[in-house]
Image (cartoon, rainbow, N blue to C red):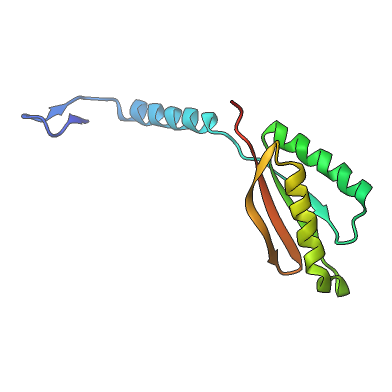
Length: 126
């Protein structure tokens, strides 16, 4: 195995290849275990969601953000509700404003098919 190819003369070392592969896999596994796993929690709304239900889900969103999970909030439109897209956007922006102490908006409300989606990320702990 070549250790310092740019040196004059190049430095080499005799190594057990199977042990070398084993050590490499072990290092990769250790690096992978140290990386943070991103968990995305979803909250589902309808344009006609009432205030009590909204507040209930808002409390869940704050808990998720405090745990360090991302929150994907979406409003589902069915049938003629699609004409009231602005109500869904207002609801998502109201949610973002309510949880701004715990998280920030990663993606503003965007319409994808019959869903309006917004993603919130937790704020970093100091």
